[in-house]
Structure formats: C-alpha cells, structure tokens
Length: 532
Image 1 (cartoon, rainbow, N blue to C red):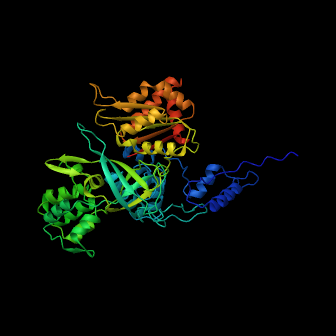
Image 2 (tube, helix red, strand yellow; image 1 turned 90 degrees about the horizontal axis):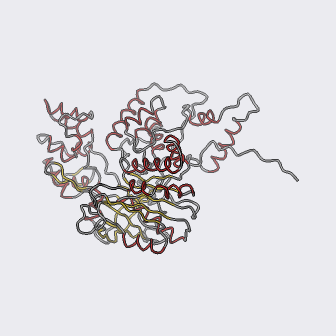
C-alpha cells in the first residue's frame, strides 16, 4: 500500500533555543499553523521568526567574528534592536566565561534579566564601556506601546542548579601537580597542570573549558593597602580589607568607576585627568597600562576610604582554560596547559592572575574553587570516522591533546592531523614524546610542525598549511572537520586566510567562492574555533 509522504517538519525554533523539547515542539507546531498557506493569515518563515523575537530582527549576526574590531562590529549592528547591538559589543568568542554565550548575555541585559555589564572578560573595558553606553540609551528610551507582535525575547539565564557546572556554583577540586613543558633555552614558561576531580564527582567532555577561581597575591594586596594608607585589618563588608582585596575584587585594569571616585577626591588638573580617564580618554598616553595599583601611584595624593575604594572596583572574575585531557582516557583527572604571564611596565613587574596562581602559589593537595564550562560549538564530530584537522600553536595544543587521547580511548577510526608550532623546536615542543609516540602508533596520521625562531625567517602554522595545501584540500574534500585553537586576533585570522587561499588554489575556486566555502564550513560546524 502506498503511503502519503508526510510534509517536512518545519523547524522554526532551533534546538539551541532556550526551551525544553516539549516547549520547542509546541512552538514549532504553533508557528507551523501560522505559516500555513491555506488561510489569509499566512506568514513567511522570516515573519514567523520575527513574531517569536518580537522586534523584527532577522536573526543574522554578521558581526559574530572574534577577529573583528569592536568599531566594525558596532557598525554592522547599526539599526538593529538594542539586544543585537549589545551582542555586537561582546568579544564574540562564545567562551562562556560570563556564564552565557554572547547572544544570550546580550538578550539577558536588554530584557533586564542581568544587571551586570562587566562579565565579558575577553571584551575587557571596551565591551564594558559600550554596554554601559547602550544600557544608558536603553534606559532613556520611551517605553514602547504593546502591540500584537510584542513578544518578549526569551533569554537563557545561566543555571546554578548543578554544582560545578556554573561560575555561580563552583565546586572544590584538588590540585595534584605541575610540570614544566619548556626546556632550557625557552623564552616561555608553560606548565602542564593536573587536578583530581574524583572527590568532586565532576566530569567533562573534550572541548569543554575549566574555570579557575584564583586569588590575588597577598604581597600585591599589601602594597595596595599601603598606598591607601589603611590597615589590612580594617573591616569591609564583614571581612578584613586584606581578605576582600585578596579574594573578592579585581586588581587588574582599573575600572572607570575608580577614576570617577578619584575625581571626586581631588581637584584642579588631577580632577580633569581622572574625569578624562573615566570617559575612556588618554590624557597622558598611559591609560592602557593603568591597573589598580598604578592608579593609586599616579594619583598618590588621593587616599580613598577603604569601603569606597572596594565599591569602585570590579568583582574578581574566574579564568577559563581549555582542558587538555580526556575523561574517557583518565577518569577523575583533569589537565590544563598554561602559559605563565609576566611582563614589565616601567620598572614594575606585572603578573598574570590565574597563570601565576597555578604555576607558583598553590601546592599539591590544595583545594581550588572550579567549574566546568560546557563548550559552545567546539567538540569532536559525532561520527568517529570523520577525519579531523587540528591547528593549535603554543598552548592552543591543549584541546587537541585531549581530542587525541579521547579518540584513542574510544577507538575512533577517523584520521587525525595536528598542526603545532612555537618558537624553537629544541625547547618549545610541548608533549613531544606523547605526540611522536602517537605518530608512530598511527593514531596521529600526520604531524606538521612550524618553528618561528629556528630560522632566519619567521615561520608559522599558516605557512606550513600552505606548504601542504594540496593534501589539506584533499582532507577537506573527504569531509574532514577543521579545528583552530589559540590567539583570536592574529593566529586565527591568519589561519582562516590560509584556508581560503588553499581552497582557492587547490579547489579551483575564485577568492570570493573560497571565502564562501570557508564560511559554509563554519555554518555546518566543520570549522570550529576555540580562541582567546
């Protein structure tokens, strides 16, 4: 008996939308009814999406590119609803460090579900300033009259229900050990860090990130207390000033609110200078170097009251690191690959918060507040036979070490190709013994290396990609997924440009066609990025 073919299921509400499966099914059915062509109320799919969103936006986000400067992103978002303009102000990394992804964080702020405008750590001060300006604009706007399509936009608030799965509900994990990955002669200091999760009951999948709640260095804290002319035992919010400065507030780039406070406490040229800095201006050409301690040194005649001072600072944010181990391979154990951050401004040494905390200030057996941040669109392919190409110079190798350990533990038959690079082959080849053993065993089908300081001319992973472009194109033609991890501003952009060139040259396409091809890889999830 012939059966009638059922009409294709209309999916207006994407699976990523913040609804349960039952809610999504009901909404899809509801809008499918609206989109029926049988009645006078028929709508297009775009109109149906607009009814859901309530503001007529088309849902496209051309600014969602972490390599794009904020000014360019804001220009692309001109004329869009406020929630979309707020999204353009984010860092576009979907890192989850704020507890949302970029789209949901902006929706939450615009709908008044989230009052904190400073959660976008990668976006830094420029994002916080832009969000503040947009939020002020939103507050001044007259309330819109309710209309038939004024459906509120649903936002996915971060859930703190499950312990260890949210920055708002961390859990304790035990620090086990650290070992240096660089050899003598390196200009870097990179550590392999191990945590024991067995007592926490926490697990993860490769591609996820690990949130660390680090504390400020007590020596640094005491220097700030001295500049304030205060006592470390002064009580603030039920704790000592030292405890609050160590555990609760950020001492990194000075927030605008600190400059505003300084301007209230001084006069003349100093007041004007502080006001200018609070507005994002740079009267002395040193704004980018001013952390909290540097501000107190710059305005050394000002001694804010400890409570007012603490109120003017930003809360201390957790730091996210790509996980470099596989739960399938080593249950109960989690590893990170961490570069220590040290630099000098003037005569003063500056230290990274979490990197130095992990490298120097915790000891085996210490418990640390942590959480697992689920990855947004960065994961191994569902089909284990899919070939993968991994591009991760420096600490960007972290998730790919995890991918390889996981593919081995699960017996995934897909081919694996790793591009790794750093400064010098003799001292900066992280996990060299592991990777060479994987190459020998056949797990790592290809290992392509690039060393930027070994020769007279700097040579990077994107240069190696071009050298083996024909083979790389063949893997793409076979359906390989491509993964990129590392620096968002330079490396990721250069790697994408190399991919476009390779597709154009070996795929016999024009530059525009090659750009479209790479864009389609992203859209289909075949090109995924974990960048910072």
